[in-house]
Length: 610
Image (tube, rainbow, N blue to C red; front, side, top):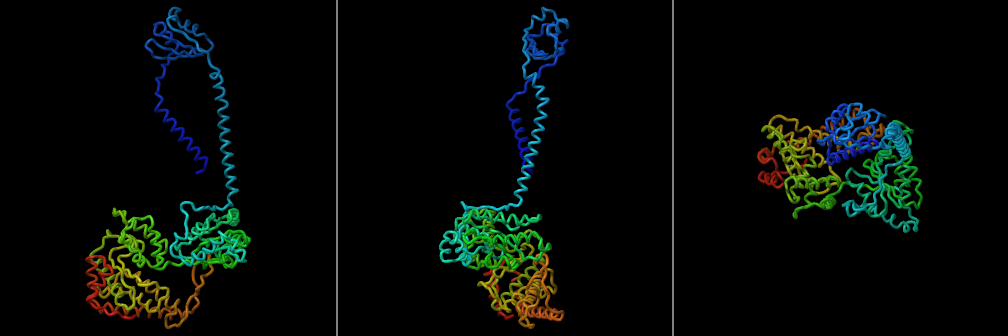
């Protein structure tokens, strides 16, 4: 909606509102009765007229009973002559009071002015609005090449490093940037050069934007933020123009920080697009490279950029002298998750017995954003149940909701499907318990969540960065546990194991082609480099023959078969334990860690090595 349309709409609404207000206070008056001259003469002859006021060619009449009437006479003829010609005697004329009111100048000129000036004013008003709109359009045309940059000065929502839990190494890297902005002389005197650009690289939700705001909050300088996608336009040269404007704005406010979010939108490797050297995105990237080189030694403008795809960025963007410092943000470990949970617990009313360590144990692989969402979901869950504080159970319930989705207790399933699901999930859990040095089971449920009919939650006892071949095969064996349990119990299998089979196949293929954990030797198959096609997004190069492809398939089948045999052996040796687990699940629907291992204790299961 244009400004003219908005103003016009508000003007109409204002006039309507004023009219409604006046309509409440102004009482409607009765309209005077219209009389012909003959009727006036008759009433005067009958003595019914009390007063006559003559205003130009108009008679304003007041009758004896107080009613009002009006009539009009012939223009240019005296009123008494008109009445005398209609048969009214002198005596009857004297019975009424006469008054003559001279016609005002406005009455004479009003008609002339309204009929001539009003159309001129309306036409002039129309042209004024037209010129105003044209001027606005011209201003927009001149500002088209300006960047939509946003300035943040902190204020009440100021972010500091204390608000960023974990990421100790990343914060140490950025503290040097803060110190440079506060006291650059210390660096310049010793001959040091502060990095012109700092690239924050990490998975989504790991805190890249939050860290950038913390740098601005700690250094107390203007913080300019813009998304790289705003530089990309269908018009050639607009992106480069906006880049120049953004850097110029940051230079004027120096010392300052210019933060470019999702820089991979314009920073992808050149020569990979459809437009060749004339591609608008590549022109925008070229301008970024020029602007970064154009920073002088004492400019005191730091460029921060964030991306979760550092692998697709152009090498010229990452060379020393441009984005020459890279800060990698990993997913938080258990200690960092505990600290992040405590940060996001601020402002929430929590029970005194909240164990953040236990919650952190149940959330491996969660990013900072995931943990923030987790605490918020816990508060929402507590409020929905009319609680006055957030308890441990509310947050643990939210862990499963974030991972799998909300519970679907109203989903109608038959007793037979419930039994199959119980044996399926029991098979997963029993295989996991029967494997040596495998992750412990934390919870088993046959309540549907999201797209899953049930789930078995296993969590590691410690943080892992490396995994062995045995651990991978154990993972495949557990994935096949539900499939095998169905087959052993019912002599048939269902579609419920489809996602488990997919996961097992993917792990086995990675063992062969990516990790070199097969009889084909320590060799990887398939190019690690993505094909240069439509921005380096689609496909991988196949660098092996058909003979090797067949051998890879054989190795994958061998690994899956090995894991299958281990899971099958565990379930066949412990059929009574499997039935006990399934029976309890059918009755209770959920088994927690303590209940599950207490259930298995009488059966004395001996762990196997895959």
